[in-house]
Length: 320
Image (cartoon, rainbow, N blue to C red; front, side, top):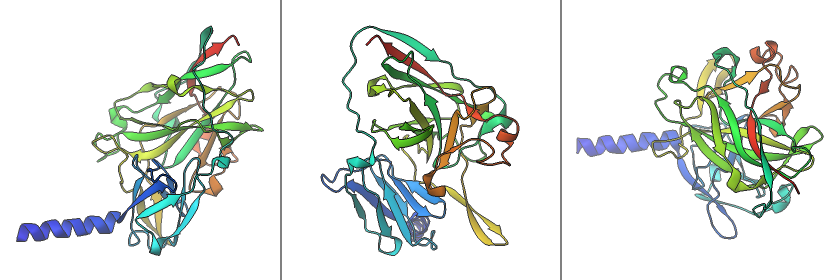
């Protein structure tokens, strides 16, 4: 009886911490929408997992009155926190994308070209990403010819000594997304298939991500490729519904601070100005900003000139 009571109290505590299990699905076919974005407002939010599931607790987020649910190709939906249903249905809205890309495999002769990734092992010149933070880098066509990205080369510093205490061996889940060039800024999202993968603390230097099967061709005006943190993975490698904020007591009351994630992203000097753009999906109306003093004049990276993320790529350049 004592064991049963202990288990019950444990489950009750977990429910209070993590809350209600909610599914996000397509309103037409009831299929789950993986990795949807859930914004709570005031800089807070989370992501659904690969089955469209997320957890929300009104006790844990007592100051949140509305949730905003969004995903690529769907109309955003607002839901009152106190009346949140167990299933949220999003309406498809393709017009949200600059285009929906369906590409047949390219045939004909091509040459392999490569833009080298730039990395280093200086811990103090690394960007420490938080949940939902996103960094984007611009790529142009090669020789103004049809150019397909076959690999993304992602510089990372993730050696075991950089692990946060108590984080264990669980990897960090990232998402790759692509955006059109809007007068020198990342614009509308391009409707390529989302790419989600995990990197653990044992990875280091440059992570080579195969994307050839996605048929990602660079438009004439160029393309922005972004890397976004979704959170930690569980032991099965799926996005875990872990606590993404820590509460810090201040004179203004308790503040929720985003959890920092490993791996670290090495930023470098010597690349062209305005090469790297960053944004916080739950802050500043999702606005992209060039990583310079206008973004954060107090940033140690910016002050030391480490303004760019040296993402590289391998390309297939076709004759026609």
